[in-house]
Amino acid sequence: MTFNIKPSFRRIYKKLPHPEKVKIDKKIKELFAFYNRNVLFADLKVRKMSGKHNFFEIDTESNRRILIKKHKGLIEFIAYGNHDDINKFLKSFK
Image (cartoon, rainbow, N blue to C red; front, side, top):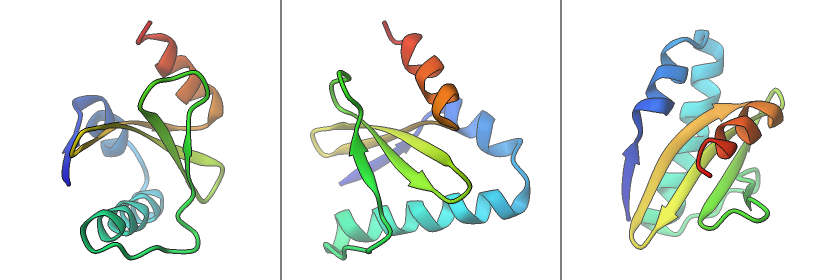
C-alpha cells in the first residue's frame, strides 16, 4: 500500500498545535501498521463517507476527523477537521 499526503492536508496540519499533531501522527501510524502489517488497533475507527465513492474518515480524539481517499494500492490524506469542515471540503469535489 502506498500513501500520499495532499497539499490540502499539509496546509491544515502545519497550522495545528503540537498536541493535536501528535494525535494525528498516532492515527496515521496505526493506519500504516494496519495496511503494511495487517495489525488492527481497537481504536482505529475508519468509516466510509456516505454517498462518496472511495472517501473515508478516521476519527481522532477531540471530535476531529482525517479525510482519506482510497484508490487501488493508494491512500491519500486529503483534509482534517470537524464534521462541518469535512463536509464543506467534500462539497468542493462536486
